Length: 251
Ligand SMILES: Nc1ncnc2c1ncn2[C@@H]1O[C@H](COP(=O)(O)OP(=O)(O)OP(=O)(O)O)[C@@H](O)[C@H]1O
Figure 1 (cartoon, rainbow, N blue to C red):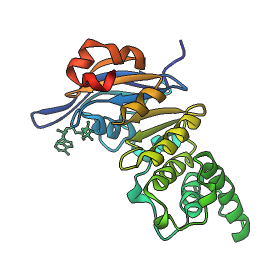
Figure 2: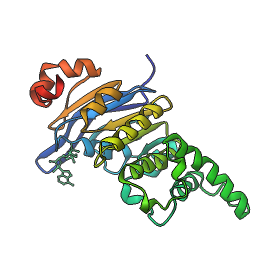
Figure 3: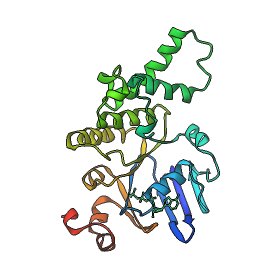
């Protein structure tokens, strides 16, 4: 079996007496789409913060590509290929979709474009940025100011910005939140396309999307992982049904 790309070992985080991440161990294999589901307040977002590096765990380890990154700050994790999709709030509304992604390409590239003239610099940034927009199906809207994009398109733009960092693993926290039916279908199709290209950890409340996209699902309840398995087996796991998933949702 291949070495996991991401591995959590006994990760724990408490706020006072409230244990939000309780001895969480799980591994994400290269190439898989691994969903983390659980009821509101189960600790999913807190776990993502600990993986991305915005919140240090109290104890336990986070390994990426076999290396201990538990104490590594977020920018250094991004450089190693562990990226979190940016939230809509980080989109610059007055800049076009293309410019938003080009800025992320520039951030990834550091000062490597410094010696190019303006036109060459623009080309070197816009080329990869357009590829990212294309991957998420947003290239026809490349020149539209980001503030004028629909909610679903903004979510696609977030994905494109995440892709611009050339991640090996992309962390997605509720990419379907707030999208209508058609928009969510588009985002699901985008994720289906992306999953063949990179490893994805997905937190999502939309169970149809989770069960249709995930290779494996981990179920978090009160900060503890109660099951990690294929969608089919999670769906029929009695402990999962009792703790979280309503019977009607699973029929
Ligand atoms: N900074 C904080 N200080 C104190 N408690 C916190 C803090 N952040 C989160 N919590 C608590 O930790 C618990 C887990 O929160 P978290 O946001 O990780 O859950 P979640 O599974 O992502 O929930 P949701 O599905 O509603 O987004 C909640 O009870 C929340 O109130």
